[in-house]
Each structure stands twice: as structure tokens, then as C-alpha cells.
Length: 126
Ligand code: SF4
Image 1 (cartoon, protein in one colour):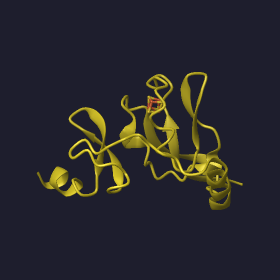
Image 2 (tube, rainbow, N blue to C red):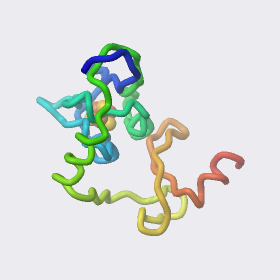
Image 3 (cartoon, rainbow, N blue to C red):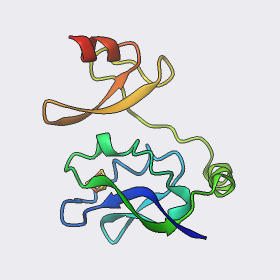
Image 4 (tube, helix red, strand yellow):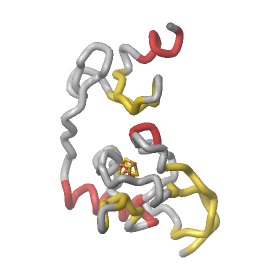
């Protein structure tokens, strides 16, 4: 069922196909097709924009348009299919992995980086 809602928009001109946005999308909505990131199944994209901060080229934004409604059951099925995704990323401040503290993608000083929740307060407050 199509509704008007917020969903990820990928600017193909800016996308270099690096694939950094694929794994952070826990729902599995983004895949690389012909060298460009694509929202392959609209119903898997919740429009929360968790992937935005990790894109090094600024290709990802949130737009409001007509799209398939977000489907939690389809997400659960997709996540069962591919299992837990292990990312080889660490906090840029302390080096912690996701097993030590939750990691969040951020844009800082012109770079896309991961920061752990222990270091996030000092990143925010200096
Ligand atoms: S992170 Fe950005 S540049 Fe890389 S594949 Fe995704 S949209 Fe394209």
C-alpha cells in the first residue's frame, strides 16, 4: 500500500558506490545495483535516516514522497534471512568496537565516522 511518508533519497550523481551505507541499514533496504546505492524495497526503509551520517559524499537525504508503507514484518523476515550483520568499524575516538559500546555514525570535520556512546557526550560538549 502506497502512502505519502518520509523515506531515504539517494542522489545518484553524488553516490560513488562505496557501499558504506549498506550494512548500517539494519533493515536491509539498501543495496548496490550497477555501482550505485538503491533503496531496493521501499517497505524496508523506515525513513529514520540512520544511514545518512555514514555517507562520505552527502548522497543520502530524507525526502517526503509517495512510497510503499514501512512494513515491520517484512523487516523481521529480511533480518532472519541475512542474520546479524557484523561491521568492522570502531569508534574514531577510543577505538571501541560495537561489542564494547553501541556505535553511531556521525559527520564531523568533513568526515564520516563512527563514535561510541561513551565518547559521544565529549564530542557534543567538547
Ligand atoms: S555511502 Fe553514500 S556514496 Fe557510498 S554507496 Fe551509500 S549513498 Fe553511495
